[in-house]
Length: 270
Image 1: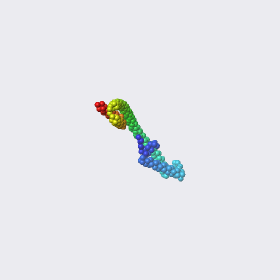
Image 2: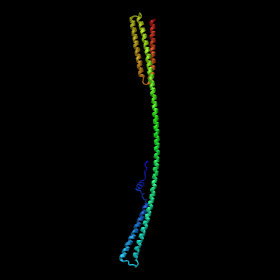
Image 3: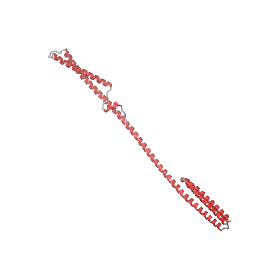
Image 4: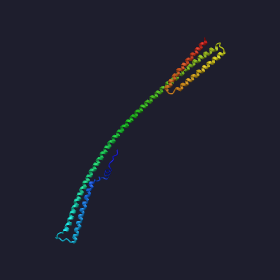
């Protein structure tokens, strides 16, 4: 906090004195004028006395002339006035100096009080700032701790979902492989029965072409289904759900294909 003082007071204190007011200046001027008048009386009286002595030398016990008495009186009055005015002027200067010193002491005490209150206010403000900084640091530390904990939980959740996704993919692949092997076995059995039957070669060729078309269609549908599943995996949870749904659909398709081939096989046997 900056303390602003009036220009007069600060300049006066910097020189070690306080400027006198207008009444003090007037009194000092009056005393100086009176001293000048008294000194003029002494000078005039002395000059007049010396001049009268030169004109009519003084020979004791001859009495002084009236002019000489006036001259002596002027000298005496002027001398007494000079001494009296000098004494009064010195006393007044001492009194003014005492007043100035007391005023200066009061100004110093006032400045000391302001400085003390300023220091106290500054100390209080610094204490408040320190407490605010400590509170913000604690809050930042707590936020970082909670953020680290949240990130750790997210990492664990991602790891768990990845493991579950991996196991689901492995199970789906195994199930699809089993279904493919079952379809291949039934087709081989169907093919062997068709080969051993008395059906004409043209019928066999047409049946083979039909089976090849069905096989191609089945493979294309399986490939398309798997491609759709791969594109649907945007997030781990969505990917897991998509694979589960796609796995169920593929297994259903395989079951239906097996049932169809079995029915066809039974119809051929009969």
